[in-house]
Length: 357
Image 1: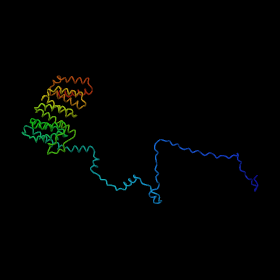
Image 2: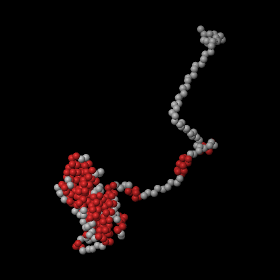
Image 3: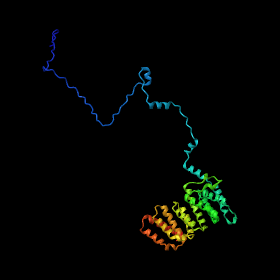
Image 4: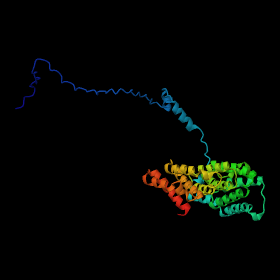
């Protein structure tokens, strides 16, 4: 049954189970992260002001200070821009293909120009022909020989180089017997053989600006000059000068150009019976054999092989047996080092070619 109205029964609070106060529940422990000390310097971060320059005007707060790098960047942006100039030639060169560049270089030396230079060289060579009955003075000889050594022997066209070499050889052979001319020829030829460059002081009134001065042109000059040296040595009566020319030709065998070495060998073979060279054949062969078998580089061994073939050709085939050339080459081929075998094979190859074996 429900209680009657007005007779509400007061609810009593529940009695505590214990007379002692109850402790509140323990709070959750907050764990701190352990900081590991690495020993490195701590990075200091600068506080960046969040107030911009425009907000500082409104709020009155101090504006942030600008760094030197910021000021420099702003000054660079605010500076007036310079107009760029465009070089049309350099721009067009970037679009040229290598083939078009080679074509322009080839067109610079056309057939008509080669024919013109060939005609000049033939005219110079014809001056030394006995049928022309022309006597050249020393000043003219100086200009002609300087022109041939500077321009002709260093030309990039092989036909022109051959014509220049023949013209220089004819001039030296025709006028080399004169002491006055020989005193000019020898220093000029020796200078070209040693340096590969001709003396340009005698080219006046020609301009020396277009004289070829590359390494290839120097080798071409040496190749042509040795032929002229051999021609002038045939006219000399001084044994000391002939021996000096022979020594220069032997030194030129070390030139790393097979064309130069071949031309030197041709000259040496003609000088083997001039002056005191015949008495030096044994010592020359000993030096050349040693260089051919024990040379330090390929060019020296190949050049020495050319020298051996020239000395044997000039002094006679009997020198092969007399100085035991074949025996020494056989020993190097069978029991020598790879370098010695290579040098001995070079000598056998060139001896066979020179002697027609």
